[in-house]
Amino acid sequence: MIEVRGVTIRYGRTVAVDDVDLTLPADTIYGLLGRNGSGKTSLLSALACYRKPTTGTVLVDGEEAFENPRIARRTSFIRDTLDVQDGYRVSAAFCLTESLRPGWDAEYAGKLADVLQLDTRKRISALSRGQRSVLGVILGLATRAPLTILDEPYLGMDAVARTLFYRELLADYLAHPRTIILSTHLIEEVAELFERIIIMDRGRILLHDETDALRGRGVTVTGPAERVTAFAHGHTVLGEQSLAGVRALTLDGPLDPDEIARGERDGLAFGPLGLQDLFVHLTSQPLEATR
Amino acid sequence: MSVSGMLLKIFRPIIIWIFVIMVTVEVVAVSGILTVNPIPFSFWLVIVGAMAKYWPLVAGIMLITMHFRFFVTNGFTRLEFLRGLAVFSAGVVLVAPAVVVLGHAVESTVLALLDQQGDGYPVFRFGDAAAEYLHVFPASVAYMASGVLIAAGFYRFRPLIAVPLIVPGAIPVAVADGLIRIDERGTLTQNLPMAVALTLTAAATVAAVIATHRVMRDVAVKRTAG
Amino acid sequence: MFDDRSPIYLQIADGIKNDVLSGALKEDDQVMSTNQYAAFYRINPATAAKGFAQLVDEGVLYKRRGIGMFVSPDAPAKLRAERRQRFFTDVVEPMLDEAKRVGIGVDEITSYLGSRP
Image (cartoon, rainbow over all chains, first blue to last red; front, side, top):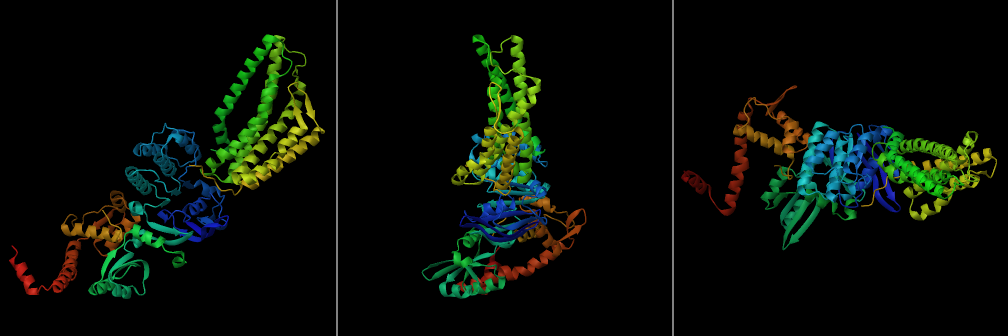
């Protein structure tokens, strides 16, 4: 289990992570969502002990994580920039990683390179953005670290490569359950893999819940302006649109079926909100609304 | 694998290459000089004497700028890496002066057999081996310590801060070079009594080691550009 | 396969219930394990497990320790009874509401239904 306690990360006057508390049970796949600059990478850096928080601590299985050799051995954090020398060949990067990582599965790394079509004889400096991402994914998965963190691992990968990656990630997780945290913008295509979703906004945790609980959480209500407004009373409004007396509101639900039935009798139309739309609505609020 | 063992594995090809190049340069250059006249100085002391300082300096810089990140992103703590770096560096600075002395012994012997030692050539004597070693060793240690510390300054701080920090970072080098030297004629120089000179160099090196630890113990692991 | 507009575990449960009703899954048939299900449909195993747990709670499936999950012997009959009941509230009532809105009387509906071959 990972416990983030009061973690704040400042860069000069910029607050990247703002007093975050978070408890993450083990052997779960987490999706970390947030807009650019929301503090995802900074938070992940603190989780992986790449960066010491300005204040606050990270505990793993009850132990202080920073500079803890036992926890360092069990953690792998793959950043979009990769932390291997550009001059090496892919195969050399595999070899070096293998000599430092006792859990490294060379056969599996080879299989992934095959499936994701990465030429292991190439120099890392000669890889395209998508191939670099594939290399990151392989380094992350084949290390089989009990805590595996992948920061936007799909950059530059095409739709086919991403699909193959998600398939491999799930298959390997089923065979070797471990804690995996994956940060992403592409919610819709991976949401089914996440047991839980964490949404960050402006350095804070906006939401941390089971993915399934977010499906159907957002509801749109459309109808005559007055009736829609009356119906929305007492609900959190995430977004609104009006046109010629017709009003559409996005509500933070879920609404109970009786309420919807009542609304429908009143001539209102209801529609469920997809995860992507819910995420957009939640993270596009002005600052005052979320404070 | 231990950090120091892994560093040795990474550096081994580089070390072997440098050694091969040094020996080749020595053989080619000395043969060239000998076609004109007997050699009046030790070519080995010139090139490998310099190498015993500058290679530890370069290695020290590489250890921080290139290898720190690789270890810390692959399951090791900063402190574990710094300890491994210390063991590896100790090996480098113990072996480098020995290579200088042994090479000088070989060069001297071969030139004696060929009767090509010119006037002023520093003839190697077994009794002087320890003194010669002790006149190379402090510089090797100091250059390595300074290299690591200055690189650590650049790793942690912006150039605006790191550049001025070169001055204190270079103290070990300044102390060692200023106090204890060996030249191509085999002249051993110490500007203070040997014990005092060695103690001052040791103190400057220890200060650099402590400063390195302070700078690196909680540094953020930098991203690569691009 | 699944949409993200309602909880997937409910969609899983509904899917299996449909299989039981259609006869694709028979009494005492073994169903996929949660891991097999997760791998097959590419969803998180915890989500799949929740769907199966829901079915066990409702008595559609039963567990045999160490072997797996099976379709309850009375599941088809029970589900059919439930669906028959819900047919009127879920299908017929909304139809009647709509008929009322557009002015179609019950007589008109019954004569339409009676005229169908």
